[in-house]
Length: 223
Image 1 (cartoon, helix red, strand yellow):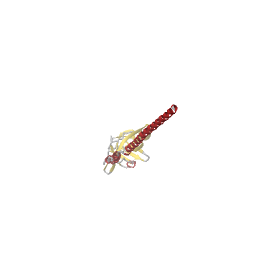
Image 2 (cartoon, helix red, strand yellow):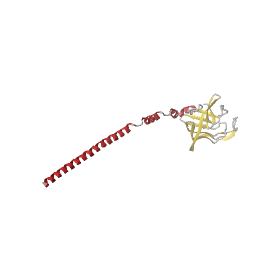
Image 3 (cartoon, rainbow, N blue to C red):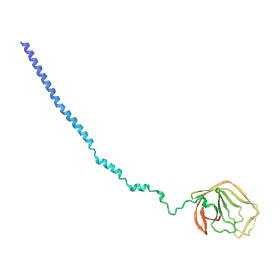
Image 4 (spheres, rainbow, N blue to C red):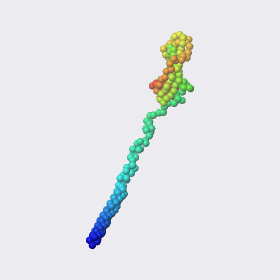
């Protein structure tokens, strides 16, 4: 009898404990599930809203800034500097313009030529000494020349010398009144070829004769 009573009491106690445990689990599960779902939805909603609400004005401002480039600045940069050429500018003298014989300072010839430059084919030049001075032993210098813009480049390679002869009074009105007679003109190679850079440009026509300026001296064309 006592044994039966104990068994029934134990069975009832176990049933109550099991019921309480099940009820406790249902309570915990019921409390947790809504919290998890609400947190997840709110989090996703907050993040999604943050991405969607990108400031459109910022993008528009950046785009407008790129489009609004100062047109005046671009115009100044693209304006060619070559357009600002002075009105008095003249192109460099050409080789065909200087071909022939040119006498220094004068458009007239006395008993002989004054100092002269002759420019010949093959870029050969001859500088003639004053023919009115009869005591000169050096008759002329010769060599080659080249034009480079406003510069005449000459290479002096040879000279024509008057060798021998005797001085005597001259019948020429110009010069010193003396001259060397009986001499012989000979071509001599110079031991050292010298190079000279002389400024050259056009100058105004005088007495219907063309003019070029070499090393600041005017020369007028004769041939």
